[in-house]
Amino acid sequence: MKKSSRARKRLVLWLGLAMMITVQAPVSASVPATDSAGGEDSIALKIGIGSGPGQVGYSKSMQGGGEGPEAFAVSGDTIYVSDNVNKRVNVYVGGEFKSEIPTEQSHYIRSLVAAKDNLYLMDYDGGKIDVMSVQGDYLKSVFLPQPMSGYAMQKLYKNREGTVYLSYNDDSYSIDDLANGKAVKKAGYIADSRTSYSLKRDKSTAVVQSSGSSSIELHAAELLGSAQILNADDKGGLLMELFDQVNTSKVAGEYTVRKYVQNKLAAISPISLDNYYFSPNMVLESTEQGELYQIQCFQDSVLIVKKGFLDPSQFSSKIALIKNSAQAYDQAAQAAEPSSIGLAATAPNGRTTTQSNANSLSSLAWTYNSTNAVNPDSSNVTTPDYLVGVSKPSSQTGIPYAWGGFDGITTKSSSAWTSFADAMSKGKFAGNVNTGTAGWQSGTAGFDCSGFVASAAGFTSKLSTTNLASSTYTAAVSAADILIYDLYVKSGDHVLFYTGDNGTTAINSREATTTGDDKTKAYSRTKTFLSSNNYVLRRLNGW
Image 1: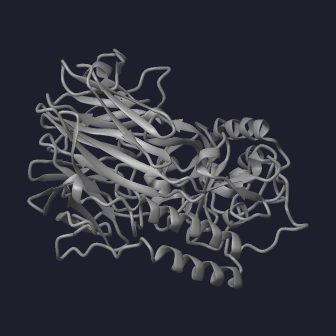
Image 2: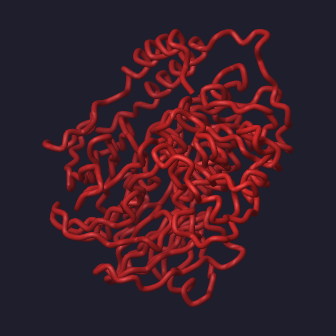
């Protein structure tokens, strides 16, 4: 999964020149953070990395998407941070660690709300909301009723009356209603029992309409990557998140929060995504008072930053510089690629067949037996999280993540078996999430991200993410021209199929991932995740 040394040197040189335009140094935890336009931020909390008291964990590598602190909440002087790797929520009061709340019942927390002495945890892979007391007592799990799907859950939010809602496909469901077996859909964002806001968007414009008939329009320079209502107060104030995306194959744009008062733009907070080591699903949260906080995940620490706001007259958009940088990135990547004349490989399967295969691989039913849990090399092979501690035999769906693996319905990693199902019947080990090793480990069966894509597309040998980011196998696509089952790729790290938009905030995906349940599955990724990780949009050759 390594580039040739010559190509890497050329790419590093080009990217260094391109990114000098916009990249900023990481925020220091010892001084207030200040954005370049002059608005002052302040650090509310600094957290160390690890498994000790008060620390949060990262997965050993970000291969396959990786794991980390996906969600947080601020309530008064208390900050709650989900620590998915260590299976807990850490509680900090006044900037100091106070306690931890175990979350073994949750698969993977992607949103978190504190309300009425309870914690509400959005368990994305589990398709449920776990409710706990702030003292750490498990109270109940609220499962989504059929036909609702966990992969359409966007986030939890608390309105100004303290009611907790699930944002689902840009509509809202009260957690209390869901707990009582009532899937009562309410359109848009529910500010209180009298006021709601709907958000409609097209490629470049978002219109926020209140139930009182007033409206706000937000316009992107080229493409509206995402837009979201973060908070609505009882004085006519509204916080709007906006990712203004440029039309390049590299996912890039200007990320801001806009504060509106009585439908007029009152202030702007620029949001930097530079130097993130891990990009959470929920980068921003707001309080009942309309205060704005950002989580920043660097390699050696996690910061919770209280964001400052600028008067609109003080804000200077950098969208032109961002576009220039993204275009330079695209050009650099193209220049660094070897000529593909005579080398280009057309995908064996067309788009429709690839989609059908990806769906079948994600829904494949199989039985997990005790023989599939006998580790062939404990120093190099690690059980996927979702298979740890499960009963055997047990019914499973989706193919487990296996680093370097290529085991699907008709493809295989070893001549000793013919498919994933055959490997399981022969007692081979199900999966391997130890991505720090040198590729596929003997005796393991499953998919890594690029193996999944290559198998679904009909290739008879495994490809790497570097292959799938090269002109030999794919071509760059501008964001405005995206089609179902195009690829988002980070060379040397991760690749996923784009399967459509997830409301106004994210994209749906099919992928083999180590994020949450480590397997092939339907998932979603925010545009901020794709942007902060420098993903590019590609299309398989022949499509």
